[in-house]
Image (cartoon, rainbow, N blue to C red; front, side):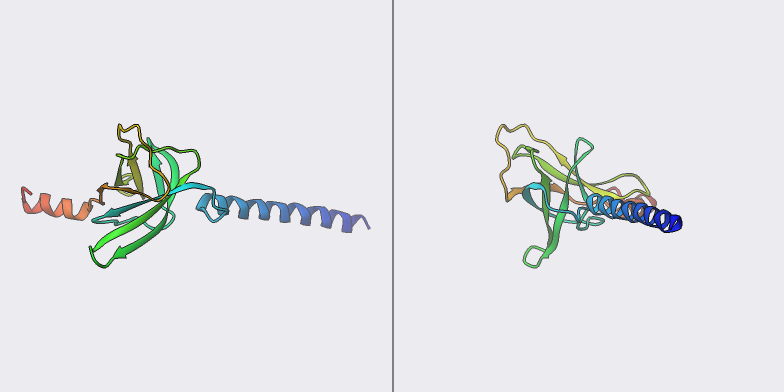
Length: 148
């Protein structure tokens, strides 16, 4: 009977660790319940490297994720929807920049705060956007000697 009790305790511990791991993965990837305070929209000339789940950062701190990314057939621009965390207020003249963590790093969207005293409301449109800069295009310009 002692062996059964030990097996049950070890099995319960393994199950608890597995459930904790699944909870951690769900919260880290944004698959858990939506706690976003508001959705913001933006459109980019190039959203290279951005996908659903990409971090939205303000001053280097994650404040949300990209919750939607589609191609606008009429303008041929990438329409993005940002799910911003609850309690984060962003001035309505802020900009959004697709940035890279480094040469081999990932991509994120940086919110560059403006100076307005008015804040975005749910569904607001970020008008000042800057798309991704392609490293390969920069290298080709450097090697080719283009001045543009």
